[in-house]
Length: 101
Image (cartoon, rainbow, N blue to C red):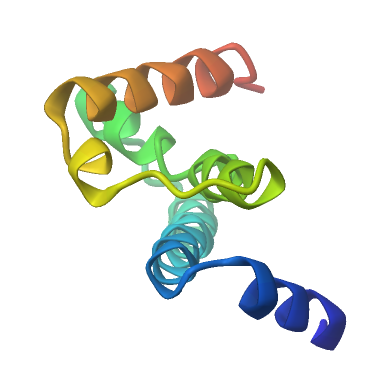
């Protein structure tokens, strides 16, 4: 883990690292929620499940890693653009909904 931490700090900008950690935390919290729902046998309605499913699969953190792997940083104005956000969510849906088990 120390090696990974060092590489993250060496290659990510502070903003990219913050976004990646925020997205990773959301993924972990989604896993916790999923475990709680299973234990309590709670079933979400379609809209609730659809929103919840976006936290699964760690796709957002993977998208964040792409910037580092290809040595570029997306400007904040692109990340906040509604069209970019919609495209990112659509890519998430394609990856996650084709992998429902």
